[in-house]
Image (cartoon, rainbow, N blue to C red; front, top):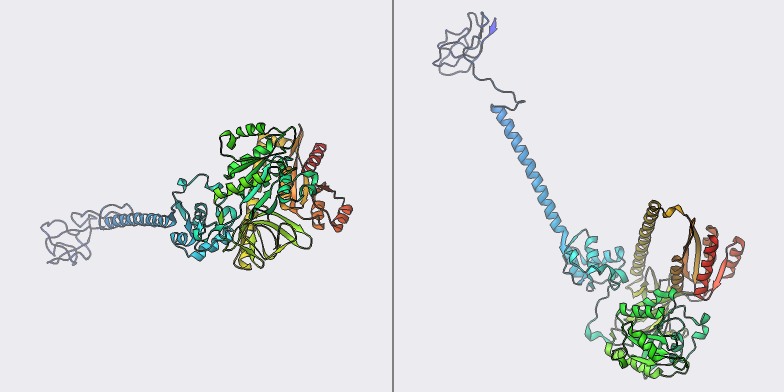
Length: 610
């Protein structure tokens, strides 16, 4: 007995059962002889429906096309529905991707800022970044170590750094000056916004004159003659080993003088002197002419864009040859007025004081050409020339005030240290001052730490801001040192692959203490450049400490941790407790007053280590 398929019958009696059937013109089909009733689709008439024929035939008549499986995705209502659903899913996915890309593009557009390529005030930059000005000021102070007010203008370099710090993409950054990262006057470099003062607030100020030249050409003797004092007699070996600053009066007008070291170890000091001055007096000995440090001083002046007045010294000697000096200077593009150039030149003698008035007259004439002015009625900003630790005073920073006026009681920040002015002492070391204005060198007492020579000293609003700014700068400095360490590590790895590391590397450890911070830094730099090697080994210098102040127990403790470490005391002493600890611990302390002697001694020991 077989099941019948769907059929279309002519009458109700043709089917094998009593179910419903759809009546059509087609009269064939029907169920078998003894079919069982079943239901079929209903139309106008009733008749036999599905049944099972006894003969095992279909019993249904002609079949309609069978529905396809949905798994195959073929024809039929379900297949079409599945296909449509799949199409709708793909379309939704494409729409979602397009929406995501649109949102990403919109977010990228919101992140992108277009800077003008010119300085902007803090409030203008905040508006560009869609941030509050106070947020920008806080970021400048805590993340960049820069102190700024809302109305102060930020240079392009600082604007870009702030924008990137807020997660922005700076459009057109490649169009900026390629050398902007090396701008020494940027807020990032000096730690404070150097905004311009209004013209009506400016007042004439004394010129700042830096005396530069080769070692032993008579720079300090010339300054002694101008000041009518004797500084050189108190200097070891007659050689200046730190920057000194003084203020004198010539024909009722004040002039600030800065004396820089001449020998090679103090290149940094000469560069600092050139960068904080208005005019450079280039001292050249008439019997020795142009030498190496003379050329270096000319390069410093040219790099700083500072005018030069030549002082040919020692003209009282029989071996003096002024014409030779002038001729040699032409090789460095310094053409004096008598040779058709624009460089003023005076023939002087520090010993006999010949020509000093003529030299000062030419300096003041050059100052009038420069039209030097500053605003004294604002918070002070200055540059630390030297810093030292003095008994009874603590840390003392010799500072040249660039603009504004510093007063006793002011809170300030200098580099990565802060403080409050406890005293202002004139450069004679005796006179106590209540305030110091533009172009005036002054000893500032009241620092919590020792700033580096060249750091900006800036008066802050309050102690909290000063400490926060100092802490931020200290953190940035530590991060920079960590980055340098990683660079050195990569360099060492590179040496391994290049074969340079096959030699045995030995380090001589040194602790440097000096009378002033600049001398400590200069000696440290000279020693770091030393290297001795042979076929088997390389000897270099590792500086553990380089700072101003007498040798203390702490210095001895640091030196005792590393075997064979030597303490170099340059122009300073060691207290009794430090001497006793050094004797017990076997830590050598060597005392020097001339930088050459210290360098030569270290070089000799390096050769012995080889």
